[in-house]
Structure formats: structure tokens, C-alpha cells
Image 1 (cartoon, helix red, strand yellow):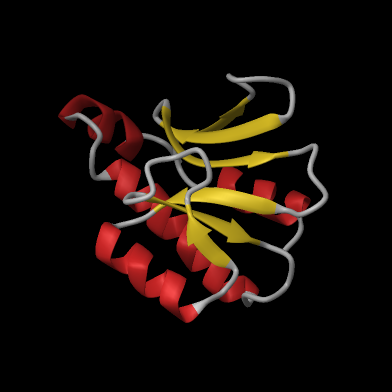
Image 2 (cartoon, rainbow, N blue to C red):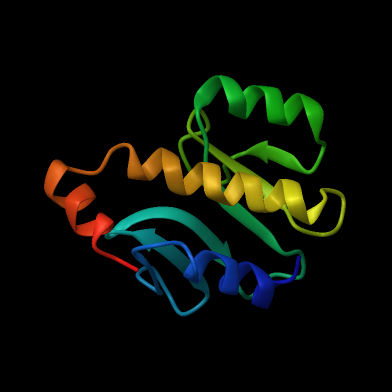
Length: 119
């Protein structure tokens, strides 16, 4: 999966927006204004930080060498995933969706209600 495919996939998830809140090189995807994915655009390797349930995060790190503790993130709740080709696209999409759902679970009742109206 390349950066364009990643971006397209994220933007099709309900309530998703993209922005550059930190600098002009860090692309961030949010659901209802809560971050679920971010990547640097000025690096050679395409890697993405994705939120993850803690025990699943550990399991994924054991399973795939391309999944590491989240770079500059809370390592308990975030993984840095290399999109360089070692992980099948189907798995990458599942990880993106998992990250989205982890953030969605933490939304307020009103935010969840607003999210239901997207479509």
C-alpha cells in the first residue's frame, strides 16, 4: 500500500478528516477530531503510527518485524507500522480500521451520535 492508497482508504472511513497540525510534513488523520493515524511525508520509508489495543499491539509486534512500538507516541497504545511491503495490504487495512475503532470507542456520546449521521 502506498501513501495515496493509504490516504484514500482513511478518507473513506466515516467522520475522517486530514490535517497538518504539527508541521508541513506530518499528515494526520482524525475521526471526529481525534487522531487515529499519522505519518511523516518527508521520510524515505513509508511508516504510519496507528492506535492499537495494548495486548493486540504486543501480539502484532511479535508477529511482524515491520510493526514496532509507536515512534514518539505512547508505546502501550500506539504502533509504528512500516508500509514498505512486508505486511499484506489486507492486514494493513485491518490495522487502520482497528485504529479508527479504538479512537471511535473513546468518543463522547454526542460525537458518536454525530458520527452516525455521516454518510
